[in-house]
Length: 498
Image 1: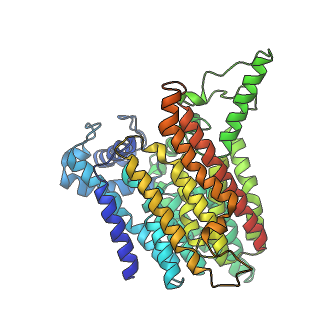
Image 2: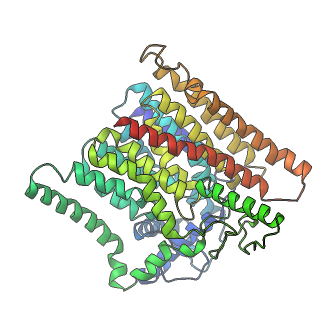
Image 3: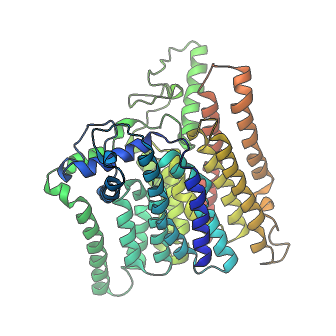
């Protein structure tokens, strides 16, 4: 417990030092949500449009913002004044930055529970990989969000499931998806696992009783979350805010997933067909212009709809679901849920690069399982963190993001291999993490330096202001290779586990 507290406090000190750093529009989003939930009755939370930053998280997170608005009003009443759009006083900056630091206590609890059965060295390693995650620090404590709070709930749920406490694990997951609906991607894995592990094999009446008990627990969470809005007849409006499918397939900055290759293939095909004289019309919603529309963004390849994206996610997840159904073992739950979130990231609709945290953070626990898992985690975590570099585009933050990634790499390379080198004979496993990544993996990791040199030095020198989206496209595409590799690697591990 002392080790866990030390890791959290050390991370908190770094996060506090980052308080004056750059902050994205998400900072004003959450500031406005404080004001909205404090100033308006609950019946207007999902109706209000006084700001462009309308409430689009599920109700449990809105309740969290309401609770947070109480001390905010004490610190500075102007923080919760709904008319103060773009309020950026030092009081609100410090309050919101510290609120994220203290919300990370959820991450501390989740990490502590999920790693408590590991040996001392591996346990401390997991603490470091989770609580000192460079990508999480970039997204939450510079860019600004509350992912650590939610990921802590996810780790808590997974910890409970691995300990056989299925009812409590299901309860924690219900709280999670009623706080941020994007975590519902893993719901099929949870459903199949709980159905087979908790609700089956004990006789029909006992199984039925357990099924109803689990349903009642989830139903209570849903009722607390959505009940007031159902009472006010606003469920349609709530779901409209939660699922804005009109935003398009991809975010303006492409998440490094399968759709990057689909977009690039479409553009190359359109270019060559036009050269050959075919009348290929280039859509007005240009992916490389930094804007994404919902109307026919592809010139040659078939258009992608939310339904197509959903089907691909389920198809990608289906081998894992079959494994869960056949052999629902608690020791594999973290790996299965991580894979489900990977499928959602690779094939999902309007995915943000930040969503890679949903599987990178749980896979930090898996990294302690074997040297092979450690090597995979090193490659994946590097690609995930680097994909978030464009979020911090100012020169002041450049040393911060670079140092965070380098320190993380040093921790992984220096700490992982000693835990596995004496486990089996030298002939059976490599003795270093770099060997576990493999020659191809090391060349891929070295390629990040080339991508960075191009974006920071060569592109401005050779192209100047031309093709301004090219460095971002290169980052997304290069990271997408690592992400897709991770998806296939995880699938092979699941299938090999039998």
